[in-house]
Image (cartoon, rainbow, N blue to C red; front, side):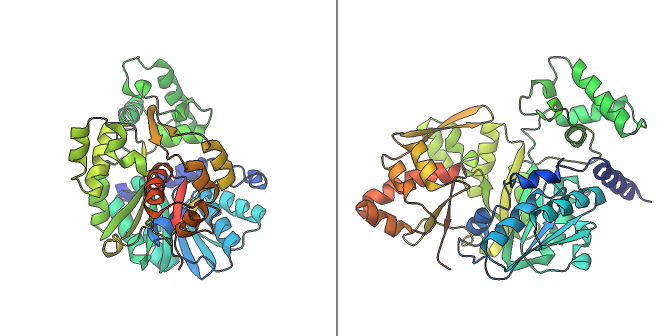
Length: 412
């Protein structure tokens, strides 16, 4: 077996022993885990310009589905919106697949098809085309991430898209020297022995160590062997800067339509100097994102949506009179009550406190964003003239969309 084959076997064995993320299927009776990428409202906003009808036939692939978070979330949301959706799940770990299957069984979801295997073989195992592909936390564990993305691109429908998560290099400062240290200290003791060695080293790190000084890396503090193994003992992982993401997606004729949360990738979020802010406005979308990453310094993951490069300019939903604002994962009434009387919204991005501007009418506008009314209707109900409403909504949208609370859909 080649060295690459040996490493593939080690990665597969890790997830057989420590399925990730650790999940108890019985918890499905209590709650649905939601997140990014692959929330159905995000998919509509960033891939289909807000115009996708999810009651129509829709085929999604979850590539490297692990214990099932993405597949379960999307399958449940599709089931809630109609009968036209199917989710195809693939993962190399039988242990992880078993957990995902049981979660689906408890929920009564019959719209997931399960496969065991490598995403590199997806064209043979479960051929496309797919309207949407989720690949969360997987490409950075492949020997050749570009080959993995190319394999997914080959089965993506030309008018479809992807949701991706990759590790962020700056926020993971300290991880890779510690991984190397653990390899140098020895191996061969088995998984349990390596975990015990990692915990001993964590307890003995000097104060000067970058891992110890990085407040973002809390996984090792959890009494969870799977999380610790995935963070410090993984046999193959790498992290990305925004510029490297740009190179990767361009190599497959893809383009980024949005990062989550958007405002974290805007350099103005971290700057006050007007002269510097003016310079930022001359940068391209990806240059701005790269600058924001450098200024912030705390992004330990990158979540983003992709479409074919030729569709990038039109794939993302934009505010217009016919646009319907959607409040994500909560009622418009609850959010309106939280915003009442406030002109600022405080967000904490891993220690970077940011104040987001709100218009005077923020609560009144949000209270009417029930997912059925378009902006023209909301403006009419508030009795505001077009210019005043446009300015108020632009401010509100920048802040709420910026922290992933407001998305848009459009009439199909």
